[in-house]
Length: 225
Image (cartoon, rainbow, N blue to C red):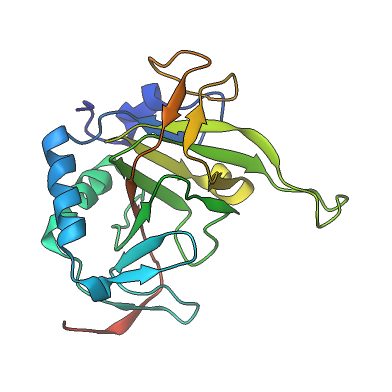
């Protein structure tokens, strides 16, 4: 696993070709932890899953809302990665209090988007099960037509067991998304190919992502489940 104790140790994980506020940590968790997390994800009761058009997900910690999040308990099996991410200091004095579990089957992705003002401006995501490319885009300018697509800046390769951190300027100024495809191509647009070679094609399997964030506005009332 990656060896560091706080955010000051993470400079070597900076994705320099992206933006200064994008970091990528390979092997953030061990294979054993990955297996345990996947087992827990799929052992969750069926009502915990929300089916969307192109993927399904689990919400843990509450449902973020403009009026504030009504806090719900987060299970013990998610506390390990949450505590390790908190120890990095990426959220400053805040603690992560929300986890979004996304399941992506081969061919499924998510449109370019920003996470918006409901969250503190930090995204931390642990990938499980399959590699994928996270594409970063610069948003269209005011002069461009609304139908114009955002411009691809490049891609971050997310290997299984890795952690990606997007914060501050990159959080606010870049869109991120995953293309609907069954395989990803390692090209010159990939910022962090690691040991992968240019031209290599990575076949996707089922990928589960744990997106761990902080919701700053939490209602005082708590639910007991």
